[in-house]
Length: 314
Length: 310
Image 1 (cartoon, each protein chain N blue to C red):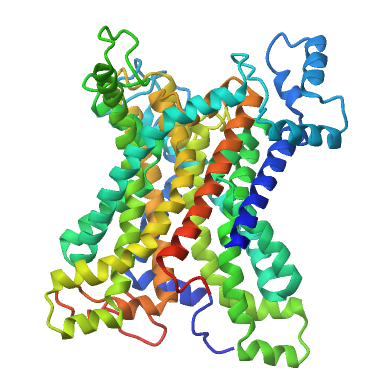
Image 2: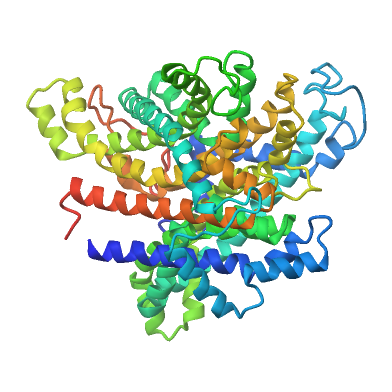
């Protein structure tokens, strides 16, 4: 357990280091890329170089960066001159409810489809379940978002998180409004995610059905439905649970495409805008948050698995 | 050398052709590859030839309609396929060389080589790939070759892990020990005895990498990080998004490109699964029909010993 914790901390350290060097040491330093912006005079370049601390040695810069990071200072956004940490936190708060709704939906649809596909294995019903899951797993996220946007044009709001012209400013009206805006992004997320969950559930189910205790249950004369629900499904949930926990980290990153299509003001949209506006401090900040969240959920998945299946921990 | 239990090009071809999913995958991917290779001859119109109005709907002359510049969508789609598949295959090959090389080195030599290489792999595995790609592509500047390298950097880790595990088991087999006892060097053992054994797995994994690479390319292109001059499927989706195909209701500018990506990915998925199934006979035994609990004969599953696959 301690080993995993140490690995997680070490990975965060590696990620922050990578975050530093990617932006400063790669060919074509940040300033030169920035200078592609029209009207970047030599003075401006020198100014920016100083602001970035790029006139110091790489080692000094690195130590400075680490110290600032420990104080929660991620720098100042180029785009709106606000602290990156504040922007990132606000974006994270916006992302979480949308991602949460989408994930819950994906888990429910995914597990249900997986169980149905395993139950009807070999019949056309099973094939339909599996094929649909594979299709949604294979489809590009941003494409699905655009298709849903075309399909629901005029019916559901297409961008943003709330209606700026909403007259009724009561709490319920606002929540309902946000909920309506959330519908399409969450649905896209759920559809792109559920395919993988369904496929994993199906193969986990089929694997458990080959186990000896299922044979025993069968010998006891239990009905197949009971066996599947009480004996197979419970054990099949073991790998499914950890894989879901594992995918949660990548989910935040996956939200980049969805948030971009729907202009949802979350962490993914922030990353996209940082790319478009060449807002390097912001891009660095979002990358750090996304990486740390993946590492965190990886650790969580490990711990969860060890807790659910005591056989694992030596 | 007699026919190996699982390995070699002929075994791979047999596995792919005998299983239904493998055959469908090969045919589907084959169609796309042929269309891509011959697209400069086959495409009906030029890539900057204005043949009608803005977002003209599909017609007999233009089955997939026109884009925002009045250019034939079908022609653009074929060119997009050519570039997307090029990026996909190139990135997958680079990833195969890096991941395969690291996996073989770690698995074959073991010891500290293994520890160091796998620790590096673990770190890369944990860092979220899309944000990393965005950061690298943004800092590096967009171009096709950069894109290929960036995508390959994301893909090699899973290959390395998989190949390492396989090499570790191959290394312990009797004929490898015999070759070593006869004085064969590391290079010879790896090339003549280890590589043919892990070949099919490496190929299957690379096919899956092609799918991931095309997927990643479409995502990066969508975020404006693709090559600005190259038309790929990802680029077509991006342009449709930026040039308001959605508000124009021009579904024909969006839908076909995404379906092409999905079809190529499904084809790769089928091929990968066919090889995986053949390499992992345990799954074949465990597969029972839950409704009847009868052991079913799995159609299309090939084991090297059976001759008459159904």
